[in-house]
Structure formats: structure tokens, C-alpha cells
Image 1 (tube, rainbow, N blue to C red):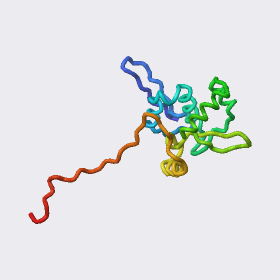
Image 2 (cartoon, rainbow, N blue to C red):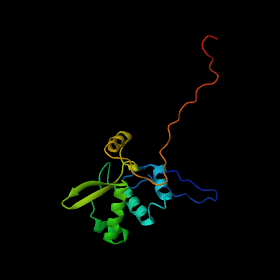
Image 3 (spheres, rainbow, N blue to C red):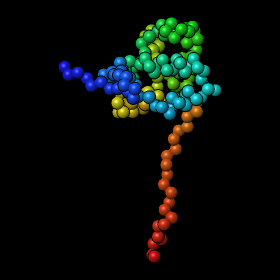
Image 4 (tube, one colour):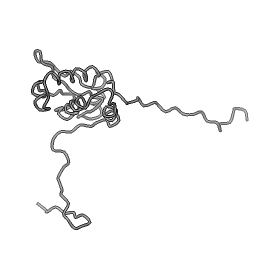
Length: 158
């Protein structure tokens, strides 16, 4: 195997390198919608944002829920199970978290495909068709651009 070329900064120090930037699976995130969530401080608390980000980061694959029970998630997030359930209920009411599947009385949750997707564009379009868009604070739906009528167009007959 050939040796990798080393890079050096302006001071002559070796720059650390890695083979690939992602260690495991990764999601494509909608930056504008996530910024709307982060900036909508009146609508979501910091803990609710943290819960949402945890679900976005832990979704195992395209349109698959996080298969962990609420008490186990609460232990990982260092919060009370009842408080976590209240946060999940609020996020579900805003359609930011969606029920993925149920097992007995347990529901497994996933983030809405409007925020993130682990699949390709076609898979994301199919996933979006099944759900209403979420209520995202501080985010305004983009307005379609319309063309102005041309003023330099000559009238007929000239």
C-alpha cells in the first residue's frame, strides 16, 4: 500500500487527516427548516430542540423509526421519562416527530422526512407524500417567483 501524502500548515506542522468524514450513516438535513426550529424560541424550549436533534441523529435508515423505548432514551438524554414523553407529545403535535411503528403499547418515533432524509431524493419524495408538512416556527414557505410582464414588447400591428 502506498504511503499517503502528508499536508503541512503554514507553520510546518503536520495536518491531521482522516479517510472519510462520516463514521456511520448520515442524514441530509434541510438547513432552512432546522434554522426555523432553532430560531423559534417562543415555540420550542432548548430541551425540546435537543430531543428533536437526538431523533434526527439516531434514525437508523430511510423512513425507519428509532427502536428504543422512552425510558431508555430518557436515560441517554439524562432526563425524566415523563418529561421526555411530554416533549415527544409536543413535537408529535407539531408533526416534527412521527409515529413509526408500534409494538404492543410502545410507539417508536422518527423525525419527519421534511427535516431530514437518509435516502435519495426519490425516497424522500415518497416519504413526504404520506405526511402533512410540520408546523415549523420562524420558517416561511418560499413564494414561487412569477415573471413580470415584458414592457418592451411591441403591440401587434406596429
